[in-house]
Length: 272
Length: 365
Image (cartoon, rainbow over all chains, first blue to last red; front, side):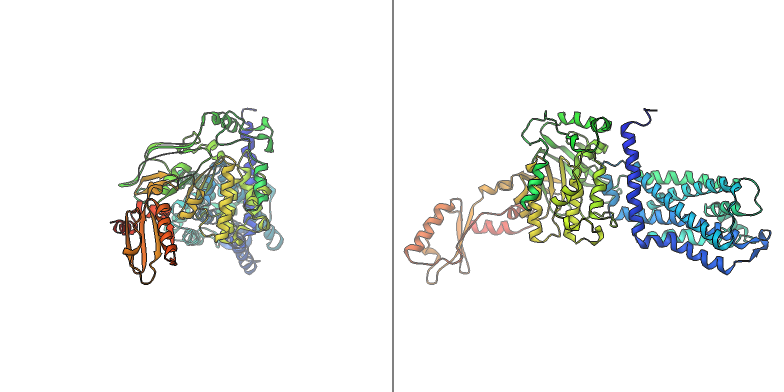
């Protein structure tokens, strides 16, 4: 055991925890950053859930609309926190030279990345608590103890997939100004065919296969399974979880490729 | 910099001087909040490698870097002894940034050898980053955190570090300690950059154009801060566009052009500056001609409008003869001056970006 937690490792873990605190402090102080994460999903939650309160979805066996929509918007909130926010903030860190500055310090790169991910996880916990809290308090959503394992596993896999993808995609974002446009162009259209706003019934098969290929629909449907009153068992949706797992693998590979590049090294052909 | 800040620096100085043999204990773990037992292994390795480091902070041999067909560095060699302020000068595109960033570990060399504090910068070793402070050119910082938070945050990455208050006082940001970085002025931001590089109590500090955007008073302050760093035995590697900065700060300067070092030496001697002829100038008094001015040992003399220019390697004797002649004839020599070529003159001549030299040659002829 002592070989696992050497003084160096213990110190590094302490650094990660401490860095998470600084990341959190900086995050909550910056109001514009919170818009994508908190204001958007909560605004949509209040608007759509209020408009459709009391409605039932005949296509889903007559379950209340909000049992479908609250987990859908939770998926949207998680994606905003992990993918959208992570990609935009990483592009900013890169363009402003902060990644370069951090690279010049003794803080190991893995520790800095771990702290950024850890901070994101805390925000995911916050958005989950607020969304579900509002859903339960105002829109008649029921949290069932039996499906909690499904909720936790789906959230963990969704966070893992979208956080790593968010860091990894920065490689394909030319500059920080383009980042919000690019990530929202990727996310927003997909949400409309991904069971976030309304059930995907009657959708053309081609669109449906596109949606099933990408990870947004698996996350939304995975969470909707958890809150579907018809669900029996622990709330696992095997096919969705499998897709999320595959995308987590893709995300990890992309993230490692992004992180391996020396920050100051220009591409071949680019003069000094 | 107020004397208080210098005293502060001295008070916390490590038992280290550039000339002192490296057998002294260099790492003062007593100042670190960590006990000796808790010091991580990489930091303990750090102490042992310090004994090998000898006198050279930086050693570069035939350093080469190419980007595709473009050769940014074409065989650069130099050494920087510990405790020296070394300054790299050169026009944009000369390869300064490439050279510095290879030493900082941001870029990989194509060929040649480089040692920084006895270590290879290419491996990006953590023990190297523990001992090196970097002030990058125009580099962002976590804008939503305050000055004190940032100094504390960057400090915690180092095993050996200075206290937050000490560093903030050193760069004179005490009044701004609770202000967020985004609210600082350009000069204050630059001082914050310096603070973040100094908080780890580095042995070697890279400063890339550290005073760009400073007003003249702030530059003077920054200079004395940098000067006081080397009094502590720190090595400073500086790049700058300002010749007066190089003149004031540097023990030695190296001039780069097109990926090569074309001259290296002290600011007063580089390019044979100390051997260059001096120039004596004055306004020719009305009614007198150039032929009336006494002949002095000179390389040449000329008249430009009403201005006399005498180029001489014996400025003292020449000046005495000319002023003696003027006193004898009760003449007032307006704008009388004796000048030597400045570092800037030499720099422009070396880098070939001036026709000043051809003017000089003409005058000599």
